[in-house]
Image (cartoon, rainbow, N blue to C red; front, side, top):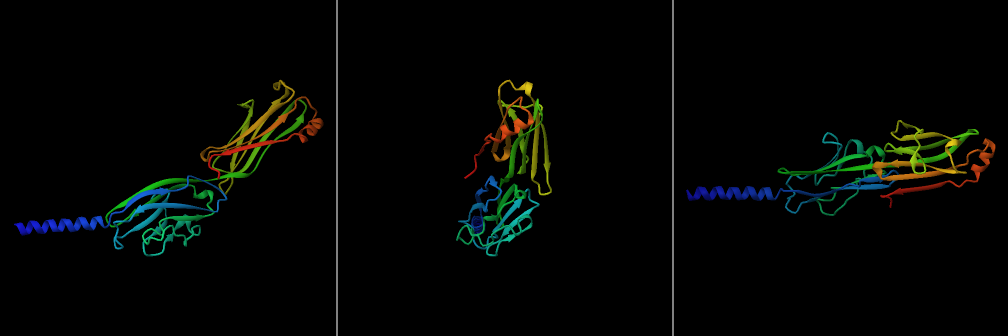
Length: 265
């Protein structure tokens, strides 16, 4: 009986040793939350512990996009990494984040990220006996190529304020304000092109009777809320002028522009 008992303990010890040699622990995944369109490259890293992992433990490193059905990257040491689906042709396959053989290709270096790469990225690292995963989100945003706020005056006693911005992502918000308050009469239209970029336009008709001072400053506020990005422009209106005199006054006006992006570098 003693021999049998000793044999069982020896087997348990061997199994525990094998499991310990094949354990892998995901320590952290680093995915930039905000990336401005035009950035040269970004790195998505999946840091895991391999101190107790043997070369034959069956280590597999994977990245998924927006759910487990969309595999975009796979690395099985010592083989070369593979890029699949959405990221194909967009990854630097020569990029190594570490000289450690079991860590070298755990990260993805995406070249010139575009807005269609916005979404959730899940890093999965596994051996024969264990799997660990983490998910992080990334937004590739576009501040647009143009942003204009101007006036159109066809009649003596009213003016149309027009604010327009193009090539934005994600879906923008735009507001025309007077004395810090939105103009209720403003009408806003948002359009999306075939590339997924937005154009937003807002118009507001202002009557001279609603302007109680010799001039009034109006502001157009553009927001990309998920990107924590804000841009505004102002214009000054002089009531009571004929359209011809009004055009002359507008030409000497100096437009102002301010913007804020908590994530700009």
